Length: 200
Image (tube, rainbow, N blue to C red; front, side, top):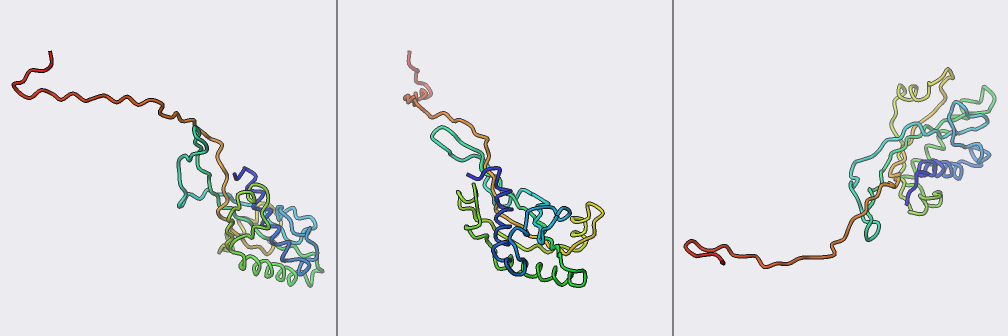
């Protein structure tokens, strides 16, 4: 059962994948890769920020499914999660841009090589149901990136977007159904033919 915690579990899985693959090079410490807004990055060198959640209805079965003998539940909802990945170099000014390019390049390499997040990075309800979380690098224009990024006065930093798909959250909406306990079977009466009298 995928709980409402699926969003944070999916984000954590993405973070753990990047921590595993990007340390100790080009990022020296796992803790410098974090789930947080790029505007409040503090000492982080790579931030992972969930900026959009949308329901994915394509090919999803609707309606109820059987939970037990007398109970049915609404089928799980499936979501696409869009994350903004941003590099934050702490290097001296003359080396900062090159440092950010290295981090972004390494992150792109890792994510391109991981069309599905390995189960070892999953936790909680996603791990329990052995979720198949897909990962896609999205083509995002500079205008879109600036709109995503510029919600305050801070200057833009090198970023790209990644989409996590097939993230499901189970419904808690259920209904009880009653089983047939009696069946009444009676002989049908044949109507009289023309000119014949019916039963008296």
